[in-house]
Amino acid sequence: MDAWLLVLVGLVGLALSAVGGWPLTTAVLQLASRSTDAGHGPSGDTSVEGDPTGPDATDDAGAAPDVTSEEGLRGGTWIGILERLAITGSLLAGYPAGIAFVIAIKGLGRYPELRENPSTSERFVIGTFASMLWAVAVGAAMRAVMGA
Image 1 (tube, helix red, strand yellow):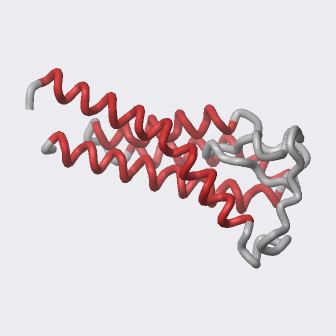
Image 2 (cartoon, one colour):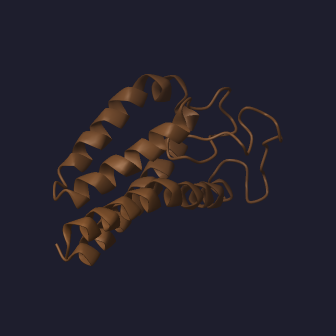
């Protein structure tokens, strides 16, 4: 494959990873919040439109934060996008160990907030897993397209 085509495929993969992970993670978190073990039952959406913890707010994975937390996790949209870019980029570069760095940085960076708001930690984990799985899937697919 030509070098310019490899670069194009890589850029498409990075864009797809960053942008495509947001709606997927949002959907996964909405499904999780409707679970009977989510604390408020299948129809218990307590968010209010326009509320900072409502449907327009986002968490680390680029999805809606826990509606029971007062403030949610700040900067979550950007952290989620950067997380997906770093994971997909690591795979495209042939350095899957880079994923461990992303997980460590994110976990250590969010630890103080998660410790203060334990109810947010479950959504953090679910959102992070959904976001990372998307980024890994895109990275693996792009590596296959590149023939690496």
